[in-house]
Length: 149
Length: 284
Image (spheres, each protein chain N blue to C red):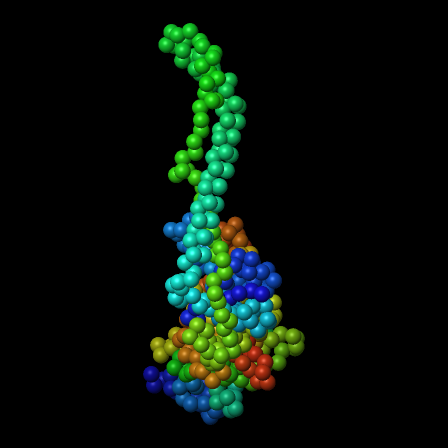
């Protein structure tokens, strides 16, 4: 769509001139999804020349930490090594130094669907299984999900 | 010394004591793959042998706790061996007969005790029946019940099926450091990479098992798998191998669906191993 190509933010991302057009376009779609679809409070783009990627930084809600989102078209392939390189170079050092390196990988399909997966250095335990009694209580499940975030 | 029998790349432990030691002392789980002698036609509960992952067998060999062996009895017994076999058969028949006599004696004694216990009720029942038939009660006949000879039918006899071999078969040791038909893993890059990851995770205190049910290399448990669910599905990625994103999404989604974190493992810089956790972001 031509009007999309004229979107000022897309032109801004292109002008960073660090990545190829497919990656920039993917980054733009993720930008729109985070702001308009997921209602993130705040999103900006960052060009990482070393990695040849445009990344996004934003906050889900006003009071939350800044998160790094790495958009990528689905056909791009990564080695584990490259993923770790991206984590090291794109990540924002948090105030609490003991929190591990973490980024969100945003994978964009050709039909513009985006799936988000979190990559973290080290061993992150999964959420514990829900107690069968608590499954009936909708309020409890909501609270628990918020608590474990 | 634990004996691991290798056959075309599979590592098997036939001794129950060894299997127990492997789990209790070395924190290695393996999989039982044999039919249970008492319940053969089901596979919900299986018995010996315990099959070990190639990584588990290698770890035990490396620690010096086990030797890899292969059986060498491929020929039928030679001429001179026949007499010893006949002697063994005779000994076995003798044992069977002794067991039968013992069982008969014990069964007879038990039957006698039971009858003695119920003697009064039996007598009462007989008296009642005689009354109904209009005969006079005869107390002498009642005691005859206990004198009838008891014979245990041969078909009711219990026979022991040994689940361990009576005499050790001939085996020869196998060198786990060099590839051979029965142990082909040594030196294979895929095996070496998996082993490095296995050894590291085991060294950190985890219990590990095969991960093929969840599309991974290993399942990583915080404790014995009988007591805990696995926390991680470990995927060994060679450092330069590209990971197609669709495969990554499929693996990560499966992990989320079964409440496990996907763990990407590969050799990192300077001999250490790099671990990356992959989880669904939870973004609604």
